[in-house]
Length: 234
Image 1 (spheres, rainbow, N blue to C red):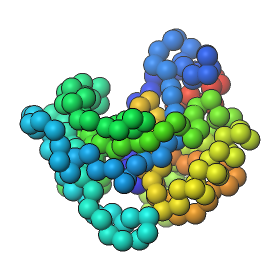
Image 2: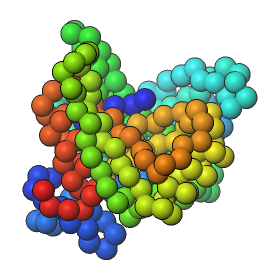
Image 3: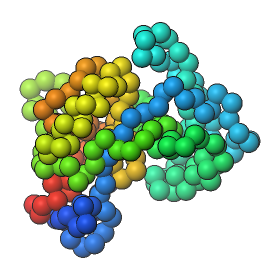
Image 4: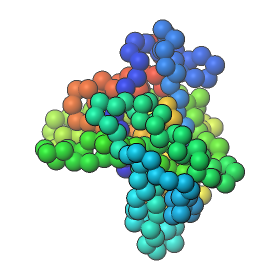
C-alpha cells in the first residue's frame, strides 16, 4: 500500500456542486476509487527519450491467476524542496507523449524510501494506469472519521475511514467482487493515496485511507482530509 502525506487547505469545509471545498474557496477536495489496469504495461517499450529525473522501473507482481509477472512504471525523482505540484509539472509533458488506449489514464502516487531511522519517506512520483469511470467519488461520502494511534503498541499511521452512501456502497461492493486480486486506486485530489489489492468482496460501504507519517502533522492532515470529505465545518 502506498502511503502519502497530503496537505489540504486549513479551515472549515463545505460542499459546493458536489465538490468538497474549504469555506475560503481554496483548493477543492476530490476523491475517487478507480480500478487499476495491471494487464496493460505501457512502459515495457516506452515512447521517446527519457528526460531529467525520469526512469522506467520494473516491479514483480502476481497476475489475477496467481502467476508472477513483471510490470513496468515510470518514476520521477523529486528535487530537494520540490512540491508535488512542481514535480507533476515536470513529469506531465513527458507522460503526455506516452500513448494509452481509450478509457485509460495515468494517475501519480508516491515512491517511498526508508530514511536513516527506518521510517518511509516520499522520494518521487510514479505512475499507475487506471481504467474506466470512478467506482465512487466524494459525492458518495456521507461521513469520514480518523483512527489515531492509541499509544498501546507500535506507533501506527492515522487512517481516515470513509463511509459511503447506499448507492456508493453497493457499487463498491460490486466492483470489489468483480475485481478480486486486482488493485483499486484511492485517489484524492488526483493523487493515488493508496493502491490496495482486493482480497475479497468488501461490503459495508467503508473505505480506509492510510496517511503517510507517524507524527502530529500526519494526524492533522488526516483530520483535515476527513473534514473536507464530510463537507462540514469543524
